[in-house]
Length: 221
Image (cartoon, rainbow, N blue to C red; front, side):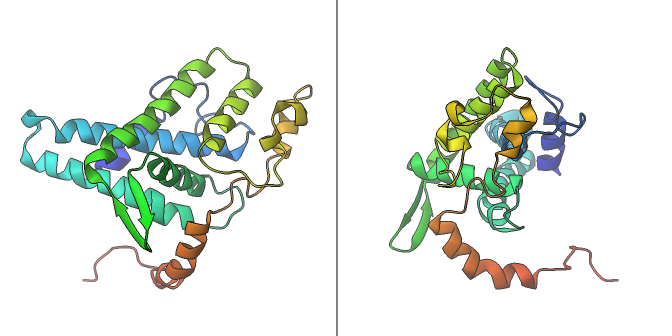
């Protein structure tokens, strides 16, 4: 509940060049990835603040820590490998968080073992959130297509694009002289494919995920 409350409120807070949930716009799906992740990472940042606030009380601080675990594990594991690969913006958000933590040497996959340096996680996650906030803040002064290109740059600096991508070739390869729809049409359904780590994880987790189908968490009376 703490995660959801902060997440949902964030959609209408901050430096917003757009609100995809209140205004119908046709735009590249990776922008929705950043919006969802921005809201999650805001919830993460606030949960860190609550955890460190001695006036918040022990119960609130304990729940705040659990929120941090939930956001990280849900994003990098469940979101990244569930659903199909057609414009899966939630999946891409998980891929971005995973790759960011890995490339900042906070998450490690060595000797077929995944490990996380928990004492460094908060700073790394908050830094990713700050980079997205910076993108939003600067984009208020940018034309729409320039904002889209800047958003793509932010993601592709961490998550490798599809080798067949036109977007990955930069503005010179894109129809920037035409209407914005031309750029959206050039985004591949799977613009940022799963990494080799995720391909292996998805095969291992597929039967587990399928076994949870229909579970709602409601107890039987």
